[in-house]
Structures are given as C-alpha cells and as structure tokens.
Image 1 (cartoon, helix red, strand yellow):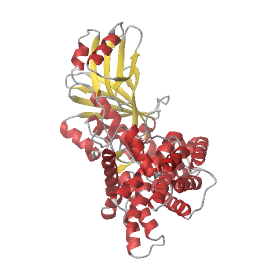
Image 2 (cartoon, chains in turn purple, brown; image 1 turned 120 degrees about the vertical axis):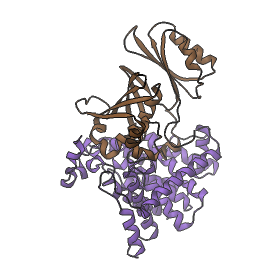
Image 3 (tube, helix red, strand yellow; image 1 turned 120 degrees about the horizontal axis):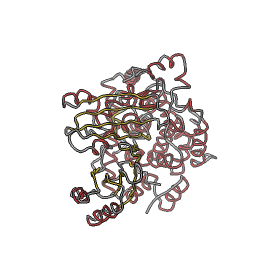
Image 4 (cartoon, one colour; image 1 turned 180 degrees about the horizontal axis):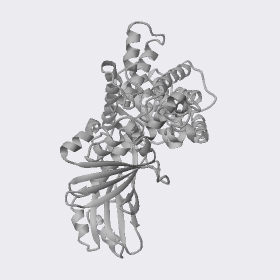
Length: 292
Length: 230
C-alpha cells in the first residue's frame, strides 16, 4: 500500500522507488482508492478535458458573471497578445489568460473543476495548459502534471486547509499555485525535491493573503488573484529548476501557512467584511449582500 | 481520517461559482430528494447564515432546485432549474432566515411535500469543497454525509429494532461501515442510519418494514455529484 502523510514521506517514496511524484500519487490512488491504473487515467483525462473547455470557451464567447463584476477579461488579454502588445511573454501571458478565463466561466455558472476550490480553479489549468502549448506536451504528460498537483493539494487538505473561510486566500489560490508550481517543475524535468521546493516558495510568497471577495461573490478580486497565482507559480518553478534550494521545506511552510491562516482576523476570511470588500467600492455591494 | 482522493483535490467537477454555495447546495438537495418517497409536489427552502446573505450571487437557489430535481453538481441544467421546475409543475418557495445565527453558516432546511401529501423536512449543511452533511430529519438531529450508501430506518424507540436491522442486512450480505441511532426522546421516534461501502440491494426495504416497529425506510445510494460514473 502506497500512502504518505507529509512531503517528507512523499520524497522518501520517490527516492526509494525512483519514482516521480505523479507516479507515487497514481499508485496511492490505485491502492487507497481501490481503482486500477486505467480507471484513474480515464477519470483524470475527464478532469483535463473539462479544464480545457473552461479555459478556452471565454476566448470565443465572453460571458458576464452572475454578480456583474467580471466578464470578458480573458478575451481582452488574448486580443492584447495577438496585437503583440503583451509584456509577459508566451508562457506567462497564456497562463494568465486561461486562469482568468476559468474564473469567468465559474462566475457565470459554467462547468469547472475545483482545483482545489472553485475560487482558485484557474491556476492549475492556466499554467499547465500554457505549458502544453509551448512545449507540446502529450496527454500522458498533462495527466502526470495533474497527479503531481494533486499530491501537493492532498497534503494541503490533509495537513492544513484549502478553505478561504478557514485560512484566507493564501490557502485557496496559494495552495492552487503551489500545486501548479510543483506540476510545472516535474513536467520541465525537475526532481521531486525541486517540485516541493517550488511549492514551498509559492506558499512563502503568498503567505498572509486575505480572502476578501467584494459582495461575498467569487469574482473580484478572485479572478485577479488567480492570475497572480499563476505568476507566483511560474516564478517559483523557475527558481527550483535553476537549482536554487530552499531552507524551509514544503511541510514547514504548509504548517506556517496554516498557523498564519488561523491567526487571520475573521474579517479577512471570506466574510466580505474586510480588505477589498471593505473599500468604498466594495461597500457599494454590502447592501446588495444583505438584500433578500 | 477518511481517504482524500486525488479527485477530491481536483474536483468536484461542478457548475460554478462556489463549491460550498452552489455545488454543496445542489448536493444537499440531491440527498434530500433521495430521502423523500413518492413524487415531489412542492418544496420549500429556508436559507440560513451565509446562504441567506449571498445566495443570489452564488446561484444557490438554482443549485438547490436543480438538486431537488436530481441534477448532479455538474449538470448545466442547474442554470435553468427555475424554469425547468415550473415546466414540470414543481412548486417551490425560497425563504431566508437571518434571525437564527447559532447555526452552521451554510445551512438550509428543505421541506418536501409529495403528491400523496407526505411531508418531510431535512436540514443540510454545506461544509466546503462540495462536502455536505445532513444534520436533521424532521425534528431529530442526525449526521450523515451521503458519501456512503445509506439506509435510514424510521422506527419506534423500542428494544429489538436494531437487532432486526442488523439481521436483515447481514442476510443480504451488506457490510456495515457505520451504524448510529438517533432519537427525539426516550420511547418515541428514532432514526437508525446505517452506512455501507456496498450498493444496497433494493429488496431490503420490504424486509425491514416487516417489523411493525419500523415506520419507514429510505435507501440513499451514493453517486450524487462529481460527474463520475461510479
């Protein structure tokens, strides 16, 4: 039975078996979830296909969100890129576009895959789909990336939290970005240790981020934060792939993120009472929030 | 600690925008309708806490109504569930209760009335990430999640009923994962909730009802939401 309870145990399994993180996670899913390799591959391909539809649809058909705060941002970014006016470059530019697209779909009651939550659903597909295009990754590689991301997300769910109401945005978009960074490192040929180093850097750089949705809606600043999450993931992956090592392990950083989350004031944990939600603009939606 | 699957991390596949306010709401209503015997004629939702405050911007109403009609969390028809319900002749009412605050922040009471006039109220809580819990059936506090196949027995609180239930399940080769008994007060109505890994054979309902102390039996097979085939 393959299972692990920490990043350290995960790395030990990788080391002993000469496996990548995705291989450990696949085996764990087969053993613990009582499924065979083909079944879980099919299910993960279904996840991948759903992610693709949610990332590409708003580029053709922009939609306004339920709350009216977002809609059309992905298309705007795409147009900006096609005009050759973008300054982020191909990988980051596409990743940001897809990440914002997924949040657009989510906010208009379209179908998405929570990764790990609905409010952070843009980050993992954003970065992975951008890498797929840039590096012509196969379907097998893309699902490897998702299993790798799943391993990091599982550890966050098990040992900390991925709920904004418990740990703030650092726990939602922060964890999503840690997942994406780790997956990107594996796909670009990095070691399991480098994957978790990248995840650690993301949590470090997003530590303390508040969850403060305007009007309590999963729209604004959530969509912008997904774009920022993608950028953080890409930077962290780059550091790890260059061989820069981290002093603070992923496990330690995850515990730190959780402690910081629990110390956050109530107003900054998805209550729409602080941060962006409490700005003069945000307050225009306070009344709306209580209307009923 | 229960098993966290990679598909709990990368999932649920769902209609947005919120795993707790949309997918969770749909899942609660989906469980509720499985517990109600007969065709639904009317349904009344009472929303509490955060559900009461932000249901409109989260599509909570559509999700609840979609769930009550048996739509999975990733069924795009959730968007149009209000008009679909009207077409189907299902009456529905949404109420909000902002006075009651000593309650889980995402709570809904679902009062269901069937064609035959049977009535039942189920309280559900959306726990985050699409996970839900049924916390009350009529006036009795209960606790079950729908993650397992469940049989819910409404019975009189008298000796021998639990033994009757376990005997029937044992004869049907059902392996019990969890079994709990909840009651209103001593000697009155009680609920036994048995959860199992296996799919429950349909004929156990009739056998359980053979005991006169058993008033009703609900079989809730899992497999709601998630979009997977299992």
